[in-house]
Image (cartoon, rainbow, N blue to C red; front, side, top):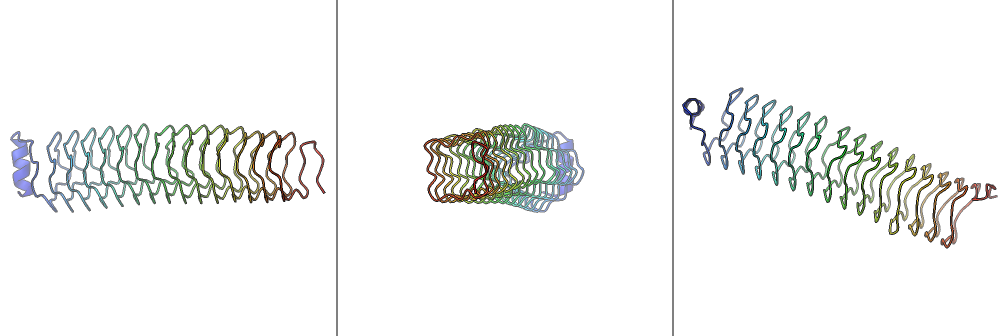
Length: 320
């Protein structure tokens, strides 16, 4: 079907264009609200500027399609293939994108407010400048995605794959990251205040300058993580947290609860641990040189072979 025939039939009231082959079609700045394009082949199509409000694009093929500045308010894109599509500046508010494939898609400045992206694949997608208020991201694949500077405050990212993602300066305050995989991610200056991080995997992530004040990190894996200039005042770090071999240089862990935590072989040079609770913690071979441990509780901790040179001890004295 050619463009003219489709537009004419739509103007006559037809809405069902499902299962057609419309690859490489040019439908620029058209009005196709509530159109049914489910299971339609739209690979390499140009739909830029087109109004597709409430359109049915369920399981449609849109690989490499161009939808720049198009409107897809409340559209159904469940199971659609949008890999490497250009969705920059698109309005996808309230859209259904459950299990959609957005691998390598350009989602720069996209509006995904209240969109449902559960189990969607956004690996290597560009989401810089995206509006994500109220979006559902449970079990989503965001591995290697660009989320730098994005506002994800309050987002549900439970069990999401964020491995290798760029989350520098992102806002994840109050976000749910239960059992999320954040392995090898860039988290410079990220805001994770009050975030729920139980069971999350931060191994090999870079949290330089991150703020986790008030966050919950129960059963978190921070093995081999870089945490210089890290701020976690009053954070709840419950038992089973693994900080072995972590770089906590200059980290602020004032008031942190680290009962039974594994800090073995960690670098805690000039780390603030005053008023912290380290009862039963493993500190074997850790370097605590120059650290501040005033009023810290080390009862029943394993402190074999630790380096306390120039550290401020719990009683306020300076270790030689």
